[in-house]
Image (cartoon, rainbow, N blue to C red):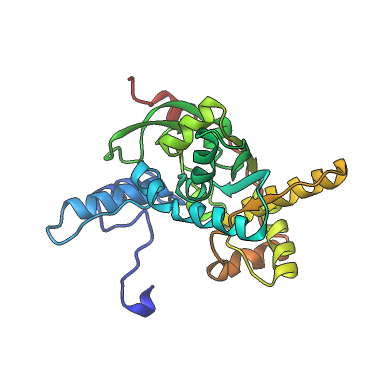
Length: 276
């Protein structure tokens, strides 16, 4: 980014009031998407020349991303196939919703039911281990309250290599579908995700992003399960990005230095959920 001109400041940063507060309380804070959102909102709110555009979680963003699923429907038709299972990684929910929602729309309008699977990191498993409640979308509690699966807005995920998947909550629409049983959710550890990523790179020639690798892991598991059952299964998953900016993470994995983190409930974060 700096090659193209911007100044990039790691979050939590000393450039905002909230960033300074976090650093004062936790000098070694690994940061999180929730903290970065708080800083971005504060920065935009204190400048007349700045606007803030949220990139995930809220419903209008999910709607914007559905061009992915609309194109996937047409591509599957061109291939003469129809997916039995649809898989995408899920952090805030926009990438997952982008692929899955158009297919779910077909089902809700009377079409064929397909299994839809959201895959999240085991270190920040909001759907699989979170609480369905009203919460803030950011750590600094500047955003509106939304009802979602959440680990608590005060929860700080471990510093795993999962990019935007390191988030405490899940989009309201994705959360509602999970609560209604319309979609499934599973969590994946980062070593298993990178194992799948390396296998994919050596097979397909594409180095996937760590986020996308969670979906790849689930897709491989689905294929192995289908083979064990001796049953054909059409699997559609979303390769949502390349991993060229994450080569140091691949280096750590290949050297056996990538740590494995398991979510430990933060009782204080859950206790701090708004009383709604």
